[in-house]
Image (cartoon, rainbow, N blue to C red; front, side):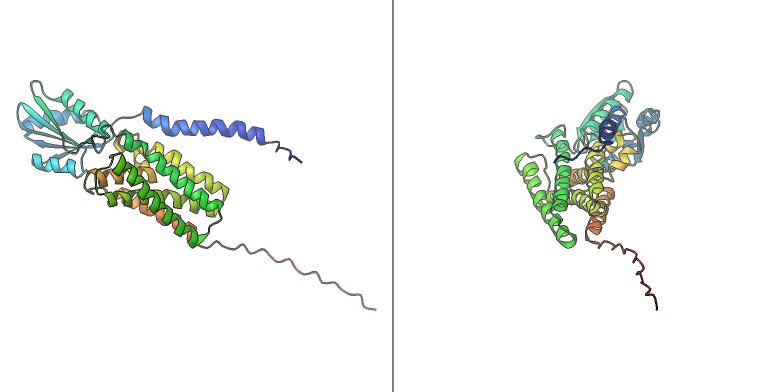
Length: 328
């Protein structure tokens, strides 16, 4: 016997689908349409006679560039290699400027700095560009690495949903989360490093980063599902897959997204994991503390929600009915 549909079902579907579409377009299309540098760290070193015009032109863009001055060209180069700056502009002669970039950090930013420096260099000045940390030859534009972020998020969603549907609870669920994340991290490293050659750093360090990224996504989804039920299974993917991937800036840079999207994206598992993976694979582990702290917080919160016992709801006792017997 078929069950009659809820009278409000049609209205809910009519409103939910357009709302979901609008949310997805807002999350993905709005940052993409507003790509521009926002406080992009740039190192400058050299004689003031040559660097002053360049610095002045960079500062004309308002908050687009965050210019840091260094005493020597070697210090400016080191800032790029350690990911303290996306590029370094050095001038040791009146008729030459050296631009040092790191396309492995963000190919789009390297191209932006190359164009900006050439346009703002004084007339008659030669601009020589050197890519200190180039993207691997197998992924010169970073597109393959960028496309790997979504499968990691999906792996987290599938893990969390499967554990929830199979009814695993507390420590058994936490153990399964860790085990699946380790195996998935090893599989992802085997594909991206050993087969595709997209990653070029220490194999085991990369496997560790991928494991932490998957664990952060899957644990928070499982934890939300354990506490909120079906609502948690909807909220988790919204955070990890929709907002996390849209704001990860893995195709560009957090400094090219509108504020505060660039910052928020680095505190979600996909953005933090991608940033951490770049540093581990291409920059010998030189990484800001934000990705490590972000992944650690998500894992801690997620596992706590999974392991911590639920509060038992004590139902109020109904007063016993006492039958009064009539006395004769």
